[in-house]
Image 1 (cartoon, rainbow, N blue to C red):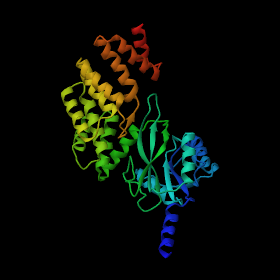
Image 2: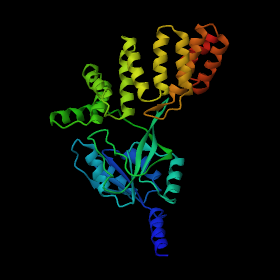
Image 3: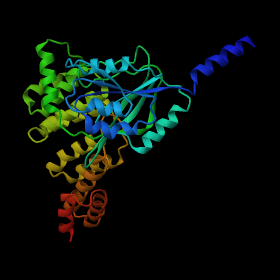
Image 4: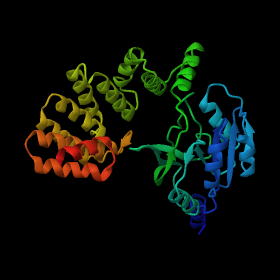
Length: 359
């Protein structure tokens, strides 16, 4: 009986149905975005807003929606600001968001239900969807147990290392940015260089991406090559690095581009995007049969590693297969794939041009 009592207590502690959830944000001049996001957080037991120096009505909007506002001095360090917000969270679990995120109704309902269920995990991923004509998404840590391991690292593109039991929730956060951040991000990296901060492997990868976003390819290339070849780096990030290298050389050195793509598939099965990059090289060489094989593989891809872009698993391979098959003389099949592309994006300029062609 005594042993049973201990087990029962352990089970009750593990499956506590009264878990509290804190939602945290770091913000600066986000009054419009906050006014959109905060009403979507009805599932939260508290909302923590760390303001890093707003000059608009951000604080007033946050307080009007019953958020707890704390002032955080900005130090060119996103992890520091995130962890400042986490420090004030009182919930058993902590969720983080950006002010320009949106939570669909399904996500709100899922999280409300999740709060009222057992919590066997310590670390939860959710899909993070980037809004646009062809949205893409990736798995992002989103809710973590409030404990000492619940800390961000990395002064930019910050992340929490997985710990304990990890699970994936079937819902998403949609990112709807109202501004671009390429110049801001580069300024943060330049300041870090000036301060001689140590760059982790992950920092180096995202630094290379930021350099490319700011048209600094020459500076980015050695950083990207070194990262991709480093066996200690995250496998999914290495694949993304090889993908970027393949894109850079696709037009000028297709053989080198194929080499980088081949290295990526030694690490992970090819995503739709990798298949399309292979296909494009053979397409440019007018090797229609090989191109078709890769585009068909793109359509069949179910990879959820790294960035999952529906453009590369639906629209683009259908368009390219239509062209390849027409070039091979299979007009009937070409029309089939054209119609498939049209069903995805009927008003796309390429679809409209092909529609006129087929008529």
